Image (cartoon, rainbow, N blue to C red):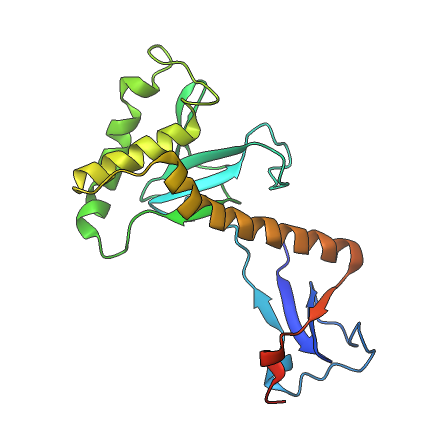
Length: 214
């Protein structure tokens, strides 16, 4: 997804496209953009560069997905980014420290910018945790259901929460509150983008309150 999705309004329609057309695809009228509500707006992609997202949980298509795309059916892989954007992720071979390969992923911030004490110790926590025997293949084997990349991320996060004197998160709670909302947005954006690629435009009725003052 190199281009941004553009949204504009005309003739009571929301028009989504990859470039601004000369004519409205619904009514055929020339698009002058004379009114503020008709001005094109670029919609931000829900995918970010994980190597530029420090102290985040990252979700990306699994390494065996050659296209590295979120297609809704392929397995996903998770990791934790350091303050420098190195992505720690658990695989069958143990913990990897990736400096590339996470350029298009979902990023979920785990530390507020004002948590200076935690930011200062983040990399030490992450390195010490990753070197533990729990993630050494000689001690514990990777298991797709209960000892996997997500287990690594959740155990690390709960370790940080414990150090901060906070209650741990269950797998279900963390998935429901943090991951699913992001993944729903990715899924919606991906479907929209692919529709536009096939048909040039996606049109939908504009909400009534958006043009109540026209």
